[in-house]
Image (cartoon, rainbow, N blue to C red; front, side, top):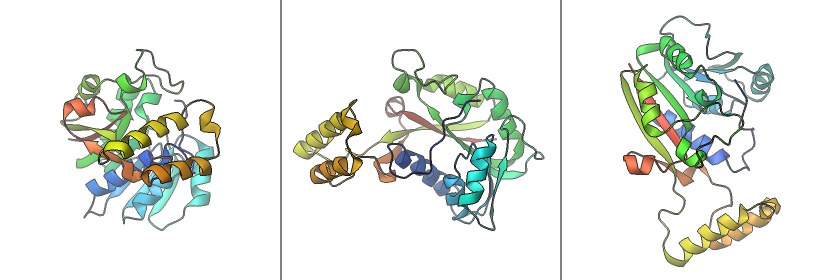
Length: 250
């Protein structure tokens, strides 16, 4: 399984979407005190966030180096980190109330076996929350472009895979919604300038300079924040999203 970890750095293009996913997971678990396994936890920021919500969390990653970084950066009585292989988890059946694994199953050709292992360690009334890229958006030419991904799925393909393992599956789309409430000149200028600043060469400009331009135009920094994403439920919108967000039970 290959590596594509989100660095523990808030000032990058992907931080907002990663944090948004963990916030949505926390919302789904709100009002409960769960035993929770976070597989492919990377640098550990998400596991730490979930522990801050009162859950007992084990963050697991196949990389010993990543786990050492997690332990060095985050400590709490209800939080631990372990080197874990998602294909062979050292836990009994139904040990956890919930399991979270974001941007993971596209990194292994043994994805169905991994999902079955996830189901095994989650209680019968528990919940699995995963995310994975939308093939049509991430690889629009029909060939996977991300060198870390062994496969990606269309909506129907992902639903078929998940329902082959779980009895109850709900797939949503994680939509980039920064401009949804903007209209007219503000929308056009912000959207156009963002595209320009992401262009090759231009994107090497100091991020402080890019932030100053975007804040002057739309009142937001260049890189998306967690508030620039939302989950959508209708199929036409889901199929346009970069990332699928799935909640599985049973």
